[in-house]
Structure formats: C-alpha cells, structure tokens
Image 1: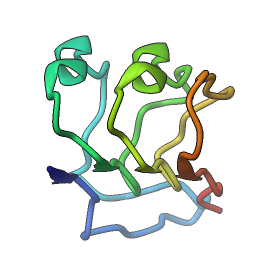
Image 2: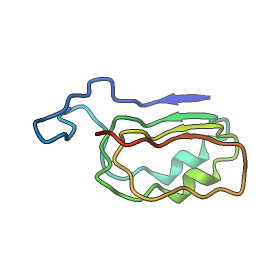
Image 3: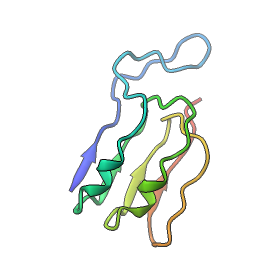
Image 4: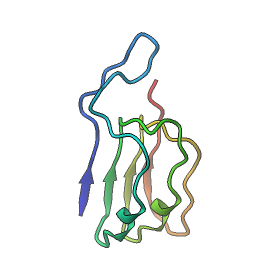
Amino acid sequence: MRLKLRNSEVGVDDFGRSSSSSYLRGEINPSLARLRHLNYLDLSMNYFGGMSIPTFLGSIKKLKYLNLSGACFHGGLTSDRKPLKIALSRFI
C-alpha cells in the first residue's frame, strides 16, 4: 500500500521558509503504524516544525520507502530492519 502525502504546492518566502498554506503540520498519529500493508510513505515538503521523526515509523514492518525530505523533521530514525530507503534531504 502506498501513502503519498507529499505537498505539491510548495513555495518559498523571502527567508527560505515554506510559504504553502496546504502543508501537513503537527504530530503524526501513531495509528499510522496499524496499516499492516504500508510499504511506501511520502510525507515530503510538508512542515513538521523541527519535531523529532516519530519512532514508530521505524516499526512499520513492510515499509520499504520513506520520504521525509523537506518536511522539517529533526533527528534520525532507528530500525532493526533493513533495507529501508529513506529520503531525508533538507529543504533550503
């Protein structure tokens, strides 16, 4: 199952910050981990305000692809499973 929540309406203000009003923000509900067949998750280009990457993302068993680029997360993701392709580049 693929979940594509990428913000496609990204703009940048004069200070290099995302100026989109349509981005996702706030906390990600841990119930997302209950999606047993989730293998692709794209949260890129949203605004999570520098919060830590939720630890439960590393426990989604079938997740093979995770895109958090430009989503303003802080920190890393731990997982005892491999391989997991993760895109974490910063939005500048």
